[in-house]
Image (cartoon, rainbow, N blue to C red; front, side):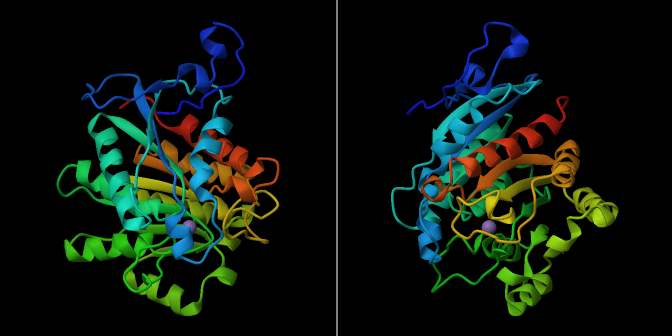
Length: 317
Ligand SMILES: [Mn+2]
């Protein structure tokens, strides 16, 4: 594994530690469930799904940039940090990468960890969810909360999965296995999704909250929707696609959003509400493409989002 955790060192004070000082390799040995809990970083270094979706490439470099951006974050209290390395897809097909990610996520879950998936194209969301289901108790309802400009429930092109299809794949899996489909999308931008897609997603059971809910006057009703959704799920895979943010905040993505949301106090309240529920089984940051970034700000934003989520996770099981 290439170890690219490095950063500032403020000395041995346990309260002055940063991620790069406390993160350890995650080995394949079964871990006993112990306190404190574990966060397990898993890289998804591919833009195969982005390219299959005719997007701008570069997300294969996202995991390395996000690790570097997370290196100087203050160590999260109450959690141990591990790095399981990058998933190996072994091909140019998003499906192979998704299966590799599912195996890594399932192993992290089986070891009592909370996977933190660093992407990588958003096709990772299906691998993240599938691995979570594989490791979950039979019958557990595993929902998806996706904070994203896009619904990502497009039809696969000629049966090829890509970065716009992960939640179509979740839906198809649920249908094939007679399981309920729980999908909540926050921040959908009508400029980036056709009415046909919106209609089809809602008909399939997706709950969609559009970008206009991200204002103070809508906060209470958005929180109600989130709470109801969380109440219906046993576990939730939380995904943040960096293209939900305005292009000014997140230029380094395949599909920047000129009118995307602002990474402000309201956004932080939303992710904290979700994280504090105790239902979050895994976290992912999608679509970080360093080659398209401006001064590393998108990777830094991804790290700040991770920090906001991780700090709000309950430390007691
Ligand atoms: Mn997406």
